[in-house]
Structures are given as C-alpha cells and as structure tokens.
Length: 210
Image (cartoon, rainbow, N blue to C red; front, side):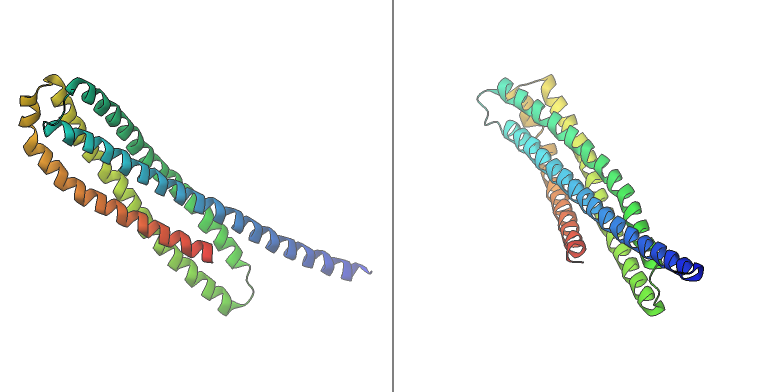
C-alpha cells in the first residue's frame, strides 16, 4: 500500500470511528435521559402520594371522627414529614433532568452534524427541534407540578401546626373552613400533577419508539 492510499485509508477509518463513537454516545445519553425523566416522574408521583396521605390523615382529624387524637396526630406529623421530604426531592430531581437533557440534545446534535446528505441532515435537525419543544413542555409541566406541591404542602403544614397547639375536638372543628379550602385546592393540584405525569410518559414513549 503506497503512501497516498495509506493516508486515504487512515482518513476514512478516522471518519468511520468518529461516526460510530457519536452514535454510541448518542445511545448512552438517550438512555440516561430517559432514566432521569422516569426518575423525575417517579419523584413527582411519590410526592403526590405522600401529600394525599398527609391530607387524608389531616381531614380525618378535623372531621372529629378520631377516638385517639394524640395517636392520630403523631401519625399525621410523620405523614407531614414524609410529604415535605418527598416534595423537596421532586423539585431536586427536576433539576437533574434538566442537566441530562442538555447532554442528550448536545450528543444528538453532534451526531446529526456528521450526516453527509444535506436533505437528511435538515430532516434530522427538524426532528431534533420538535423533540426539544416537546421536552420543554414536559419540563415545564413536571416542574410546575413540583412547584405547585410545595406551597400546598406549606399550607397543610401550617394547619397541622395550628392543630398541634390545641389538640382538642373544638380546635379541630375550627379548622373545617380551611380544610374545605385545602380540599378544593388539592383537586386542582392533583389534576395538574396527573396531567404532567401523562405528558412525561407520552414523551418517554416517543424516545423509546425512536
């Protein structure tokens, strides 16, 4: 093999290796990206569940049906702690998802730049833009759900603290108006959360299908 052929062979080999590496990295980043979305969705799901558990325990107390207010209040305080921990975790994982999204889209963009055919490259870029736009909606809805859970949890915690200062049927009864308002808010909140989770699931399915 003469020098000219050797140079051509080396160049072709390097280009091929570069493309294979880009494809491999793209697959790795895609898998990581899907995992972070799944993790965020699970964190929001858990936060919703813990919030509802705390809310249900609180409502049971203020309705006046409890035969052991001290015991039930201790369970409520534990449920409140679990709720606050999980709500904080949901907001944190949303930030992690954002970081992985940047890595995924960067890897995908790098791979697209190596497509020689201009028409196909433009088509791939268009699909990438669509995927980014879809993710932005998912990110906004999941973050919105996490952000909405936080003030709701704070309102619930305030009412739990109020009740703890005077753990009597009369004090519980005095919270019924606030409890009713909280219940109405929870219906809107949980509907928002469920919609965000559905959006995330649908988007992940498009990534897996792709």
